[in-house]
Amino acid sequence: MTAMCGIVGYVGDKSALEVVIEGLRRLEYRGYDSAGVALISSNGGSGTELATERRAGKLANLIGAIEERPLPAATTGMGHTRWATHGAPTDRNAHPHTDCTGRVAVIHNGIIENFAALRAELTAAGHPLSSDTDTEVVAHLLEAAYQDSDGDLAEALRRVCRRLEGAFTLVVVHADAPGVVVGARRNSPLVVGRGIGENFLASDVAAFIAHTRQAIELGQDQVVEIRADQISITNFDGTRAAVNEYHVDWDVSAAEKGGYDYFMLKEIAEQPRAVADTLLGRIGADGRLQLDEMRLSPDELREIDKIIVIACGTSFHAALIAKYAIEHWTRIPCEAELASEFRYRDPVLSRRTLVIVISQSGETMDTLMALRHAREQGSLVLAISNTNGSTIPRESDAVLYTHAGPEVAVASTKAFLTQLVAVYLVALYLGQLRGTNYGDELDDVILQLAAMPEKVEKVLETMEPVRELARSLAGERCVLFLGRHVGYPVALEGALKLKELAYMHAEGFAAGELKHGPIALIEQDLPVVVVVPSRQGRDVLHDKIVSNIQEIRARGAKTIVIAEEGDDAVVPYADMLIRIPPTPTLLQPLVATVPLQVFACELATAKGHEVDQPRNLAKSVTVE
Ligand code: F6R
Image (cartoon, rainbow, N blue to C red; front, side, top):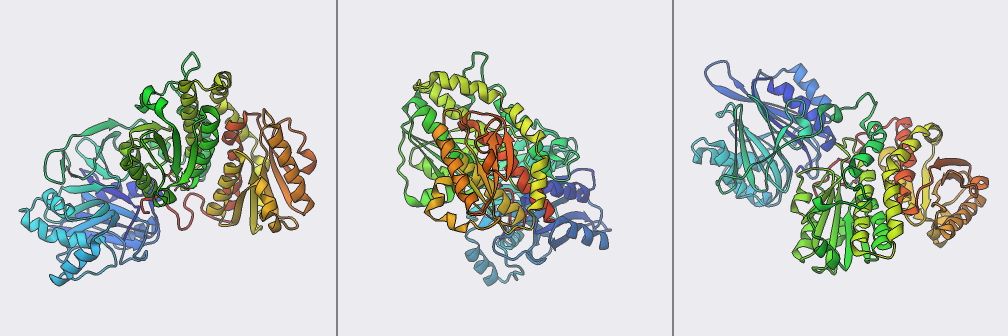
């Protein structure tokens, strides 16, 4: 089976192989444990044939194989990068998969849940299945459906899709249909790129942005047929579908490394811009927030009596911070919950519950399932997402987009900062709307929020000592992270970044919890990063953490302290001090997270790891 993969399809007058490989390169972040291509070419006589190549491992392996054994010239083709779930990442399980005649090829992203029954049926009918994948059944089903549809590949795919359960993006070609590529989607992404004399299919616009910025979002349960000069979209039942075409407002340079060694470095550096872009147009000249784009009426929002913020991974850390901000500024009870846990504990939801789902990709299956559950219970769902037109925002009642631009590195950085901006905006907006007690504070915080891009920039300018420190710690086995209040999710985020990039044991703790157990971990020279809260209005919190630093230092820890400029109370206890600009407490994660990103990235690089594509991970997790 295959879960979250990169898919590219092409028909036009260029070399399909070149277009597809280039597209796959841009999508490699989606999965990178095997790759393959299928081309429809002339067989030298009057007929056409299917040519395929596929290889386990990164795209480079596939390219190497094609160099050794070149494929025929073709202007129709498709390609795939895979992130395996069940079938191991071997050559045999790599896509494309073909039918008995070797004339149909299929690539797939998702999981076909009823594949065991379909496989049994096909085996009984005499189809030899040669891989462990669910995808292969589609190729064999298409073999017969194509005959039954009188050689109409789109109709054949519609017939097959009606029999499939689960989540899938499928793209198919047939040797008897040169100049045609057909795609289908259910619960998994597929976009169409409209060019001139050429058209594209892809999991993500990044794959074809070098060729066209005109895109069409394929709807749920739809099939698209592209030819060089024609795009037709139908529903699975064969009826014509409405077409939602849009212009992509970022260009190819945004999807490239821009001179940095890694996308992650570029994306860390882009954070001031990403934060500014996410604020753009949302703060009025009068200092009031304008979030009408969310499509939730003020009346609906005034009715809310409970908020649950749901997400996974780094986005979940944004959800934890949202809880502090929302409860403080709105006085509405708020919970933060992991998407993968939410649905299974039978949460109490009502029409007056606002569920906020946070997802950079907009495709995370755990989060999507949580949102569907919330909507089934009648709750309002607001999505915070970085991906225009992706499934999560589309299925939500309302959406607030972050404007981080494409995030290619697997580890989330700029998307996280913009998620924080989005949750602050929502919390402050609700606070304004409901006229909570903190009117003056809200006005002030909005002003401070507008100043955050500059502060993030300032932090980035002072990161050299952090990089040096990271390099010096490359030999360590473990690093701990401590924080209080919103510094606690920041500590969790620092630990997550280090785990996923440097493959080191790293834990984040609420500093107050230390004495209840984790303090036993402290030993001589253990590096412990401490996020010190701002003194502004939170003296008690600040003083408590200063005591915590003393406690761990007394037990031999090497203390790495992140504290505001001018905070001298920490100086005697810090083996290494990282300064951040003074910021209101709740906004501090926007500046405190940045050194932790730089730290993890540099430490991982020092250990020789490839930071853009950490092992075992993929950018968009479309399995539960
Ligand atoms: C970690 C990371 C992941 C994602 C998580 C959710 O650096 O990137 O933990 O945050 O998989 O992804 P989205 O936000 O796309 O739902």
